[in-house]
Length: 387
Image (cartoon, rainbow, N blue to C red; front, side, top):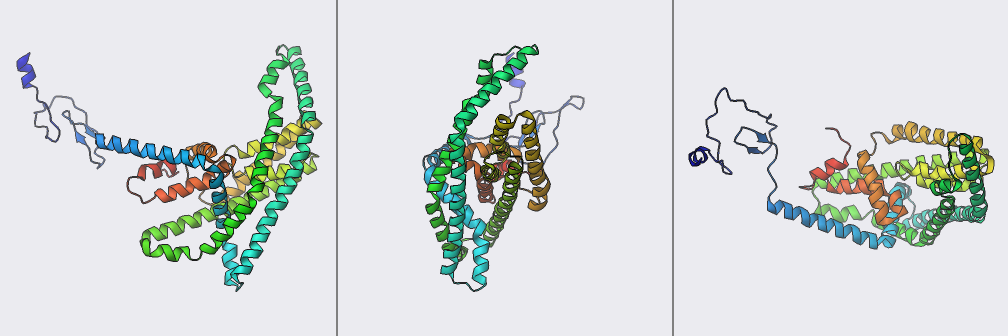
């Protein structure tokens, strides 16, 4: 046993394998992908070296720092929401300001005019939306009672067709009070956003003032490649935000007109909800349709609700799947999994506004990580490239 152990060669790290291999001895070889790797005694080649203790320690430190940053952003969400909203509004409206500047308008007149138009639009839309939400909240107890009666009728119908189910069980599944709670949550969020309008508009004006001088300040400190990459990423972000806002506006107008035509109450509020929630990927359009469908079902019955549903589906599919891909071109460049995770993460960090801005914020992070050594894996996981 001792002689056999002594005869068995032990391959140390960095030593070549000099043990003889019989021609008849079966062995397995993996194709060489041209990557640095480890040569095992049996001839296997692994595509990457094993992580060292220093690599693991560095990864844990980076993970801890990212966790602290995310939690810190969550604590400062009230202020970050205002800054991010102002930044993205300024990015969307910046071409208008530059165009008026090239036409010879004084910068002061431009800031006053565009700022007043922006603030007036937000205030007018907020007042109309708040008026509709107050009316909906006033009728919320009536809707809750009607929905409870519909649930009892549905329970009796199911029991009569051999599917015994108590109304209490359906109440637990459908939660009639959840509709009222959702209206109150939306009203509270709208009120908070309405109060922050002045701060956001003020930040937008200062960003407009700094925008023409910022590239000249950064140019001496950035190489040509980095400067060009930042300019291209800013152009892509502005392109996405502006066109997404236009598509969302079309969706909101279409939903508002359809609800008005179908005699659904609070048609303007439904259109505003469709406009705002269209920025939320994956689930935004579904959430926007729930209040209209619930009110339609309570006021007019199942047939009317199905007709309203068909209108919502046609509008959202026609714009989101038909028009948006043609206008936005090659798309966001983000993988579907990255979009869903960004929705959850930014929603936790910043609240409802974080869900609205989840895609542009993730696009910004991916743009910042491009070209940074050691971040290639993160960029690849966020991107939708197949190659």
